[in-house]
Image (tube, rainbow over all chains, first blue to last red; front, side, top):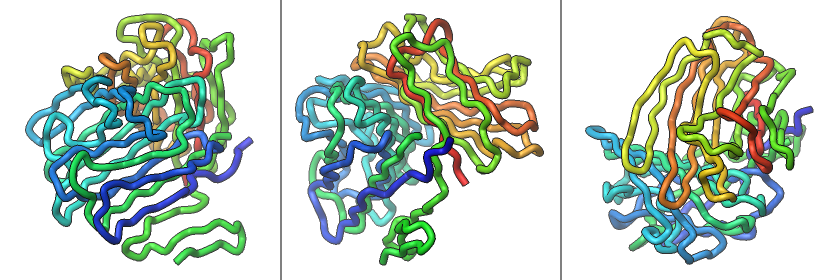
Length: 173
Length: 193
């Protein structure tokens, strides 16, 4: 029997001024999956990271596939490579990060079974910088802790005003 | 400005510039299967109602066995005829690879899914979109995004699949390449209007 309507917006941040990061905190554990939708631009050509529960240890890794319009490639970052910064959401392989112009980059981040305390956490990411690249990645946070906070930040500089970040919760039957 | 439905009590926002577009009531949970301690050779969603426009399956899954190139598969409406085909773009962490297959008796997805060769707490994330699943004028199109990272290995996959039938989809079966889905694998079916 259907459990009813879901895909609930939990929080939205639209920056009115530049900010070093965006944080979703006190995330309820009552959903099954989380989805973060990002439409943003950065001051610098720099990677964007997502970090869970304030964990700055070497517990993040990922595998990605990238298209630049002229070539398709794949790569990965191990836990030591990401160095506790979090899961990388753009600027894979040193290509352009989110733009610093009026045309925003975007990312759609799915975090499956985020409150499950048995499994490590897997994030499926689709992202793009219009006119520059498109990519997808799978990120791992090697922790069985339920995710209760998420910090999204550029590696350097600030996020530009007007950038939006929305967190959704999806509840399975 | 928030707008609240008098009927459902659910909030939405206007579609004015700067506000995210929220479509309350357009995404509904239908059924969930969680794999228990004994594992599962397959999982099934049956008696799927035709009242939605699209379906989405969201899973975390892991195969018990350790098989190189392990890939689970889907069958629809118990159809075991060669009515399935797919195209895949896969990233191995070193190479981007395209592949395809046609006239298959199953729709494979998620190349090299998490299995016994991965660290024990790692599960593959999969999102499957099935478009116009109840439309009896169209063959059925599937879209897959899946991947698992194992800190130094792993895959990320895009895939499109085709079931060459105009029948409305009423049943979906998913199974690992061989053996069982592992305990804590979780499958959730959603309907989208």
